[in-house]
Length: 463
Image 1: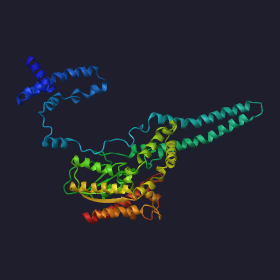
Image 2: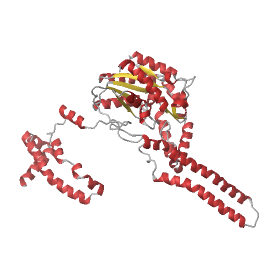
Image 3: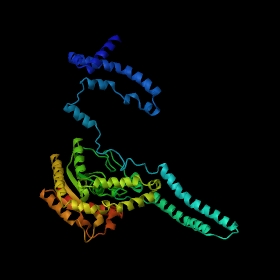
Image 4: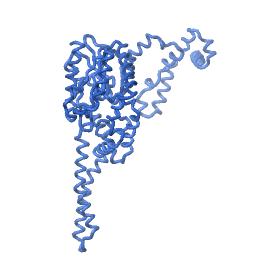
């Protein structure tokens, strides 16, 4: 035991004091020091376990000390005996590390989960309001009957107010019940309680953190073509309750010989998509045919005022009255009202159109070229699908010049390009959008997109 203590002291001296480390720089001494720490580890673990289990709170006691500290591994790493930094070790660690692209977070992780007690309390107030109104009206009528004096203006005002409350509060209760339990859809910005509850009901992530009902693996499958769709909420299926109804899943079902991935997340723009693919490649993701699903607002992160507008929209809801924050009906109405009055959000599409007419487009061109180069550098072939602004469809569609500019750009790079504006031309926005407050493509629009993309892909990749 005494020799073991001496070896431990020498090991710690090697770790802490550089002169001692130089004097004991021989491999044999370093191995001996590591062996001392390794032999000491069971003793330390037993002591720490006893102390933690007896004094630590219950959740930490259940974790187990072995999961909190590994002195043996620590000693090897500190003494430089582990194979850290070697190519083989790096490859082994990469292979062991799970392939994850997105952390499993909610759209608004800082907001309370739908159904928490304050929301239930708010609903209880809506339920109580008609009962209290009817009760007060009954009490008032009894007192009026017992009274022998003339009915004055005061009683008349109070009586009419109670009658009005008896008429309005049941309507409000019905509205709150509908939006809380039956109204199951989204809005474009996904900031409302209705949208957050929809996400909780219908948004499921796979093993890599993308919305899908199948797990993915980074390596290319044998005997299958991999089609990787890269995009934002249009690709992820914002507003599509059943993930099987979005266009990537429709294509997967139509082609069992294709491995279809929807590498997408709500809110991504071109810069975020570029960073996403760099991250995916760094973690071993292999590509074959890559399809960038481009939306006209993918340029929005370059637009001045975009971030401020989103922060204002969030601040409006986060600092609204308590009942507005906890009522599904009032929260939805209030958000729509304030968004329509915001000078930026109310004219959002106008600002996007202007971005393609100035120097911002030149910056966007460089980012899109970088995306093409990144895909090709990793052995993939790039193709692009462009979605129009579905809420602006009509004979006077104002963004046609943007589509023409994008088409010329991609053709100049030799990248296959499918413009879905021709697919949706002639259809009213109500036919292809989720609802009047959500401009994302609905199930029918996804079905049309899947058919057009299927025919287009087979034209240059074959069956």
